Length: 376
Image 1 (cartoon, one colour):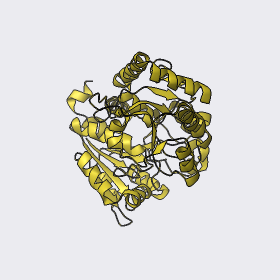
Image 2 (cartoon, rainbow, N blue to C red):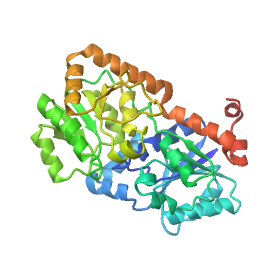
Image 3 (tube, rainbow, N blue to C red):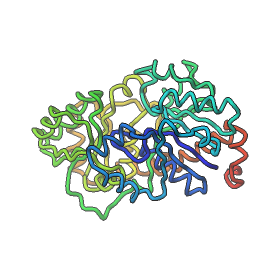
Image 4 (tube, rainbow, N blue to C red):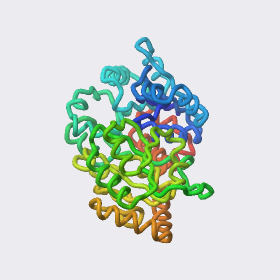
């Protein structure tokens, strides 16, 4: 089959976590013999900021890291109807321009022989519900939501006829243990500032414990304001800026543990949806300690795959314990890695997607499945 993905950007992962997951999905589809292509708007915000921050070498590095991925930039004159007419499955991400969301839906209603899917990986459905309510999804066959609570929100609001939970996952061809890399640091956190959505949480679960334990700690990410950089420096934490997602596994491998600090809108309004970094970190076999969140879907085995703490003091105690007990750290990392490999890789998500298409996709998409896949 030919899959067409409308995304904010495939090329840039600057403050754009969806690119991580989409790259892994597209790569797995192509390994299975399908065609996968991305379409992204010309001058996308994430790409513009990446170029401003890192220059053209970052785009060149993407091409070297992912020679199997292709993306086409579109402008106002682009013929979307022609592009989607050649596809079996079209997946439109929720950051796509609302007018284009409606235009693609209309093409499906006018007889397009492709399965049309809307893909939501953000908290706007609850934090800015009007944005989603204003989208015309009447022409869409399916909605994929990256958590059960988000799926329920779509159903309650009547925003989709068929809505399925489709969690993010790790591309384990990139994210895997690298025991050959020497560990030179204690703690790493890879995460963006987040529009003040976790300012207090970063201070409580990262800055204060690292400062009081005098850890050799590193933060990677973007959009940190000057006052945040000053607090990191005061705590002795090295801020190293943006990191290409293709390089993140090596960064994890150089450190002895990491943390998960969820954004407040997810904790309060969309329980059960962790950031993709949880999947990626655990896939690397690094011990992880998490600030509070509700794993209502039991994606992981809390206390076994990772440690959950309630405040700064328990975070500090957990960090101290893991750093002092290599055996416990190794057992925690091994359990988390096992869960990822068993349930949460991009291969698993592609299998879920193909299963949904076989049962609920448009007839042309079901018929296009290869015999071997149809028999799965």
